[in-house]
Amino acid sequence: MRTAVGLATVQARRSRCSRGFVHGLLAGVSLLAVPSLRAQSGEERSATSPAGETDSAAVATLAAWADQVWLSLLDRDGAYYGRLAEEGIFQRFNPGMNNEYELEIRSSLFHPGEDARWAELPNGFRVAGASISHPHILNFVDWRQQIHISGPVDLMARYRRERSFTARRDYPWVGVRWGDMLGTPWTAQVGIGVHFFKPSADVEVALARSWREGEDRSWTLEVRLAALDAFNETIFQGLGVRADEVDAHYDYAGVPLAARTTLRAAASRWRAELHAGSSRRSEVQVTFPATGRAPFTQFERVAFLGGLLQVTPLKRVTLALYGTWARADTERRAAASALGFTLREQTVAMGARARTRLNPLWAVETELERVRRPEWRTPEGGASREHSDRGVFARAALVRYPEAGWTSRLAYAFLDRDAGFLAPWLTGQNHRLVTEGGHRFRSGFEVTAGVSWDLDHFGRAPFDGGHLRLSAAW
Image 1: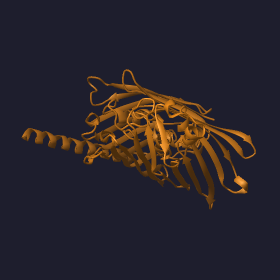
Image 2 (image 1 turned 45 degrees about the vertical axis):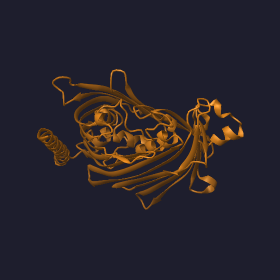
Image 3 (image 1 turned 135 degrees about the vertical axis):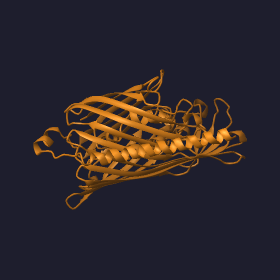
Image 4 (image 1 turned 90 degrees about the horizontal axis):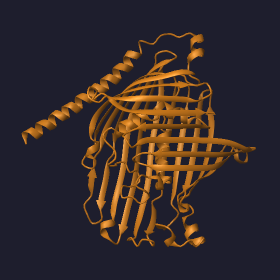
């Protein structure tokens, strides 16, 4: 017993020491970088500074995070375990993951700066792949295109592919946008998510507008309303499709709806984002006529909220603070009590990101984030059980990113996670060195390849996987 207590004490001290080391490293890099800044001439700046990149350019965005939560609601068929999985809507814990999985997602795929640049592009394509084991490669694909039709009307198309341990998704979306609707400053948009299973198609209606205050302050507001599984009743009731023609038959008590709002503001030395969304609590009766499985009634709801504030306190130093919260509630009621359960998934994150520009080509980027993933599960007729999952992620990187030419990144990344009793295989501390190199073309095409190095076992097995990213804008 004493040995166990002593070991736990040592591990706790190691965790505190590691966190203190990381916090000190990140603070030290930022502080040391400031006095090393040197003046640059106007000629040098125009020749080498990144296009559209200034000291107040975005170092982070919550747009990618909000889109991911929204997509987990719209495309529930694309979840790793499927639409009706007992793992819930977010499906955050998978036996295929290891304690380096989250580190792979954060250090090998798209960086915060890349997400921020992508959020501003009307047309573009990007793909990222990372080897996480001998048989598996994480891969993400984003594509978006706007095509002018006539007058104020544009055709819009998007595609999202995701292969990971939380999703197996292929989600095409097509819509029509009408600018300056009826002579107003509002833009209207109607789109549909295309699914192979017809009843899963979702319809989105959106209104958006932008306006300015004074010389340097601008605002953008967008409101979306989505009808989930919009054609379910039409297909099974109006068209007379028999329930036994599908694996699972869904009968909604009412039309499931969801809404989302995005507000952005920007000025010369600051910018802010607010993202919020929620779905109405839906009720659907699920039967399995083809297989005879026991039926059940399921209730579902998703809500999320995120805010970001970015400031430029010094000429070449940009800071961003953010917080996010997302929750998914699933309740299943079944005649067979063993099938019933109540599940609440929640993810809360708070973090900070910073960029200190050393000269027009080079910058130091730092990041620190704390995440909590609590989960409450209650089997039907049983007692509620709470699961706690906490983690700290930190990164410091030296980055070379010109307007055109060779790019490079040298980054140290750290992850300290305690995944609790539900997923003990995800618990651990991991230190990683990431080396990347690539080329950015003036045409908008960019390619980056990298190798990760395991600092925890550097003497025995240093290689920790490779990754590749491609992107293009037009």
